[in-house]
Length: 171
Image (cartoon, rainbow, N blue to C red; front, side, top):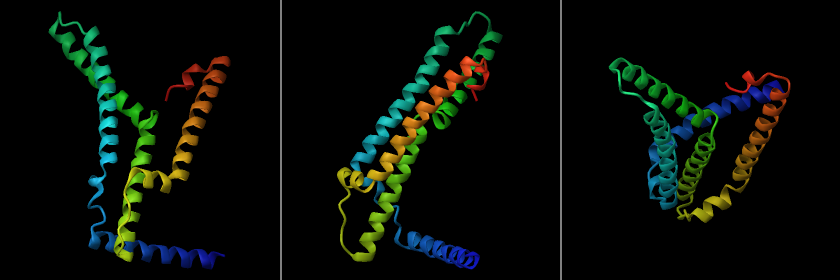
């Protein structure tokens, strides 16, 4: 058992170096921006992120007092802190981590499709419908993880609120 693990490990390491050479030689990353659906998806994500940060700025701007110059400096530092916290919560506690997972799947889909084209010499369909068909299981995993995260977060919040440990809810 241990011998198989070690031989499989070395085989995997050799395969990784060959895969990197294949990726570099055939430039598998070319053409990823030709997906119109990916561009539209990224445009919507960028718009939502921009709205999130605009909301933070608007909240700060509606409460800032510019009567005293030294207070303005402290207020700008507070805005900076709020922006950092909003960015952190987007990446680690918000929906953006699932968007990153989906974008990683798009990269995997593109690399597999391009590798198949190179190895077989036949073109592959790159439509959104094809992507969804290829990624059904992963989409189910992402949705299940999101739903379970919402359920457990809500339940943990309720339990911590009941036993007076609310301070544990915030990271």
